[in-house]
Length: 213
Image: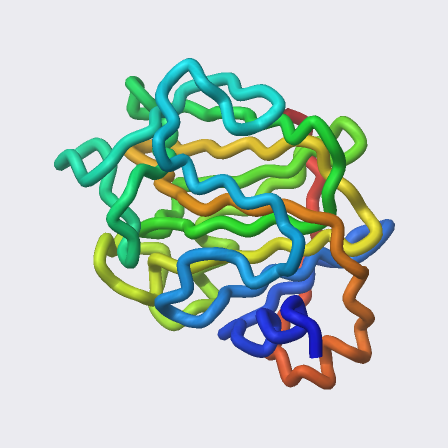
């Protein structure tokens, strides 16, 4: 069994967002996992980076590289003790766009204190596909309540788009803040429907809505 299959087995949930071209599989790695298990993925841990340095092909918008926590602004994701990314900064509401400089169909990140007002989006064929903290956290025991210490609401989340490829990731928050670390992206084999069911993943099907940026 390859590392990607192992990561699916570790997932506590799976969402399949049905679309015209393919399904989007979202899994959560086991509580306490803080980075990807996908072999060959490009991993960005934000350690030692200072503005205006960008670890992606390009970075724009409201964001900051931080350590620790500042009350009312950002909180260090549970399970790490190092520099990470927070969006937005300095405003309460805002977003940041990170362009890969390539295309990928897999993305993973340690999503800190998952909040309902956090959104991650992927640019596919010029249109952003949006996923909120609620979309993700409703499938994890516990809600998207922004708990800063719970291993249930500080999780490594994996997105697999199958035959579709994205070129940029947008992170947004309507309140302080969307904290994340250990971003990872890669091109991985498309998981087959039968293989997913054989892994015993509990899934729900939602209609994926395409929204303009």
